Length: 288
Ligand SMILES: C[S@@+](CC[C@H](N)C(=O)[O-])C[C@H]1O[C@@H](n2cnc3c(N)ncnc32)[C@H](O)[C@@H]1O
Image (cartoon, rainbow, N blue to C red; front, side, top):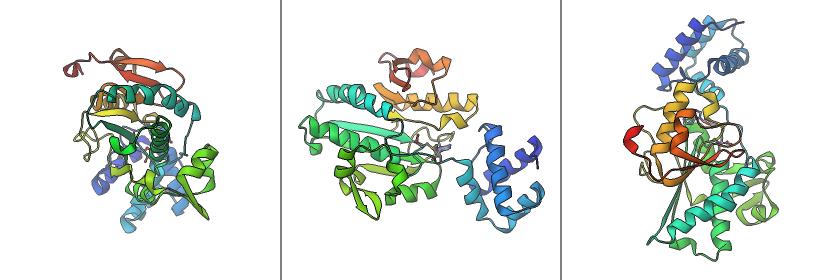
């Protein structure tokens, strides 16, 4: 069973109409493969039948969206990235904050899946501050974690995980920041630092989470999300992320993605493998 371009358009329009989510600028090859999985799972005979299935069982939209928005993640995914966050990024952010009174540290985990990345960065930050003998209460720490999928956010807030999600977690973190009761859960100290909220990165109305102040992140992580977008969409989203960063703030794309050519002049490369960039201080916001 092949899904044609025309059939894909019909389904994507139907999804926008019913859910408000627009996947038209996601990479079509990936999207088609994911839709195909739903066709098989529902047992329909062909694509037309799947459209009818959606009409008859509208709850299928939620499953379809879950399938289209891949959730693979884990705590401290790509440990090398976290090593650099610890060695270079956090010290730089904290150094700048020393000048401020009542310093705020603002982090955004964009496309957070079940919260693994946001909680990992919260743990790293708490551990870093404790190591420097700093009082957490001297800082206003806000870690915003957003995803397009509300069901994922509900799970993220629960903060309950299977062993596989903790594969990269060091013993020290496991002992200090997790509670084990059959399954692992994140300690309240860490949970309290993270605010989850629904946000569609491709939205043309909002460039950043509605709960945050738009232009003021010190650190944005957007890893393993942009790979699913077409190049024009990646470009729009990347510029939005840049607009939301403080001058001198860090953008972490992780090991699977890199910035587009037109964005490069606005950033300084911090590490090529981890794809960590720092926003230049002299960027004129009106030029992009
Ligand atoms: C593979 S996970 C990446 C999770 C985490 N960032 C990591 O690297 O481990 C991709 C996440 O991006 C989310 N996502 C996909 N499209 C999105 C969009 N338009 N806006 C916000 N999140 C989106 C998916 O729901 C999914 O949770």
